[in-house]
Length: 130
Image 1 (cartoon, one colour):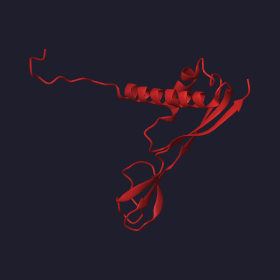
Image 2: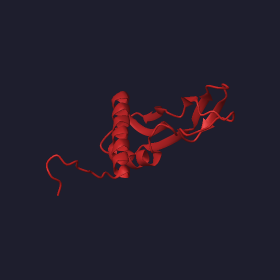
Image 3: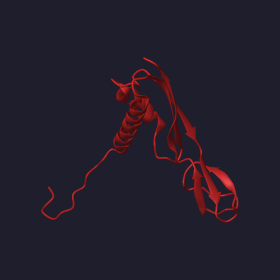
Image 4: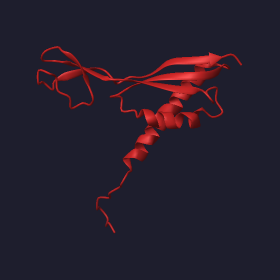
């Protein structure tokens, strides 16, 4: 047992924390779309999620039907378009695709700026009148 003044250690399941993150994101998407469509029934939602956004597409997909219950999005089809990570080298100005932030340009430099892959956008919403 830890005494007074002793540091406490807490263990957190990273996958559980990540799922809560995607749940909040999905709730926000559903709320934003619901607000914009008024009384129309949503039949399809297309999200654009960048590979470097930190958002797990499969978790968003899992949360979508739960979050959409009793809203204009209930029963809607969710499509996710994943955009690749893109960077521009600060040494040679080349643009290239990256899988993660530990990328290296063909010139050997790891000094780059991100130019794509961090997106999280509602790209398209398809509705039908009720």
